Length: 203
Image (tube, rainbow, N blue to C red):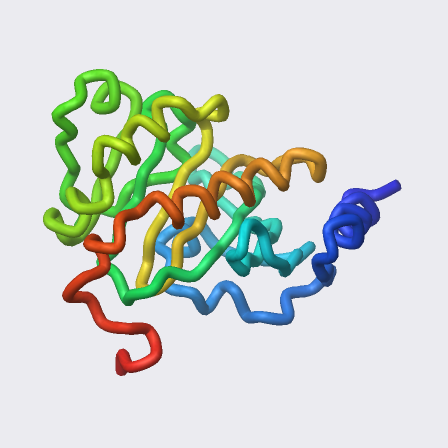
């Protein structure tokens, strides 16, 4: 069986929908992660509901051109899950400090300094609005991150969306990425969204 067969079977078993091609134009979402490299592509899209939250999961690929004595290109791949937030939010990204730095924090972000030394050693958090970033990273959220078994998971908030992503995962591992993304959405305190535009009314 192919990867597509396994993902389609996963979707069917959970009452989700599957499409080899991208029916949602996901690359139009405002994630900085989608600006890395060239030749971006989305395939193997799963849409459904998990723990009362709608999500879209997909395989994302992009090309990297290395310049040197001889030009060489390579393709990188990631598994991604996107879910909606109740407000149009400032940019925020979190990665594990020891993870491969293919997931680069944008230069215009300001780093978040946690008061927990264990969290500060483990994670790199940055964003465009220091107050919003601090309101997201409550003690409960930081403890949740420290308890994660999969320390490669990265997350980005852009506008009214939150995305969890990691190096390309086997189909059997996709539900764990979905669960982590939905769980983080639920953990962010409602107070973090106060003062930010509602997605339905934002211009």
